[in-house]
Image (cartoon, rainbow, N blue to C red; front, side, top):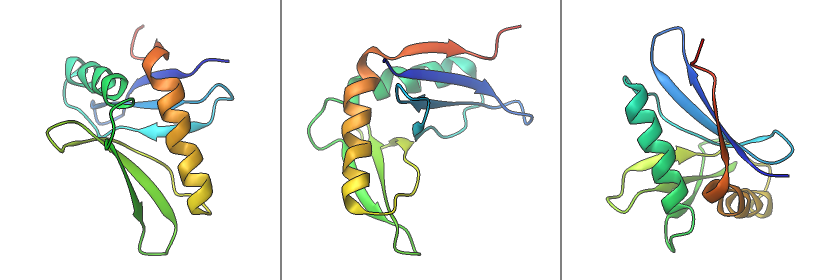
Length: 112
């Protein structure tokens, strides 16, 4: 099963995307973008940076749960994971992004 980027437009008119694993689980979410073109560039950045050494930064939320962010070469965060129950599951999330992002299909839900 392959991954998918789902591009959506929110009720506020802004665009965002999620990267889903082959099982449909969201493994990375973007910030909100004012322009669709910017969101598409964000997807391209995730594709490029997912394979780059040092692009993932594991973090810990205030409640102690681990999560990660994916950063572009300029240090800007291009995606954030969900919260995980353990560091091991967080690491598996990173591996899933590395596996699925480069070839993930784009599902544009903003059309129509």
